[in-house]
Length: 120
Length: 107
Image 1: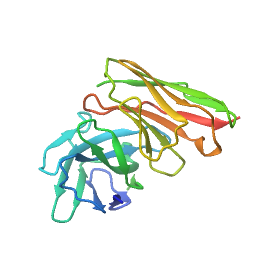
Image 2: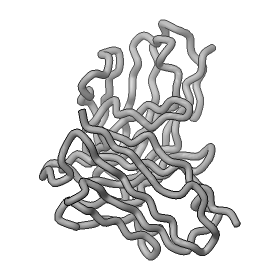
Image 3: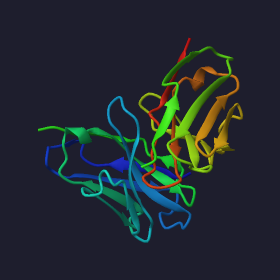
Image 4: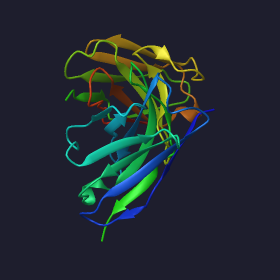
């Protein structure tokens, strides 16, 4: 069945760029029925949607992060990636990748999550 | 942004109890409301989508209702594995926002 796996550094220095990749296995990222996105959860807090990407490259971002976020897809590798620039301690969180069913945009398959700490 | 507010924030209940969790949206979201269950250290799991559609593989004791601005998640008879945090999420318009979560604990 479809699986998503996040990968990337667990520690990022303040002001640097956080980079994560989500590898999709057991299915194709080019399916027309899905978007692919990122959600984060700071320690002890709720879930925050970061943004999503379609296999064509169309993106949608949370306005609260839009100036710092880039999400892009690599169909040849069946992966999509997140870049978040100018990070601060407030960006410390568990980052999840998730499949978004189109057009209802519920998130039906999630990765296990990866913890990213912003600290010098 | 559409604000999502869940109540209660925490709830104590016993195995076998019927439990309801409410989610309110700051504006009408039609039926674009989804419910997730999250256990400690795990990713959220989709339970209900489009307000009342049960995700494949989710036990039938879970049900959802509502439309517009008020939605309810009902667990008809709590099982030990149901103690977790429950999140609602609106998918009417981006940014897709979540409620603050409801922690369901064992009484």
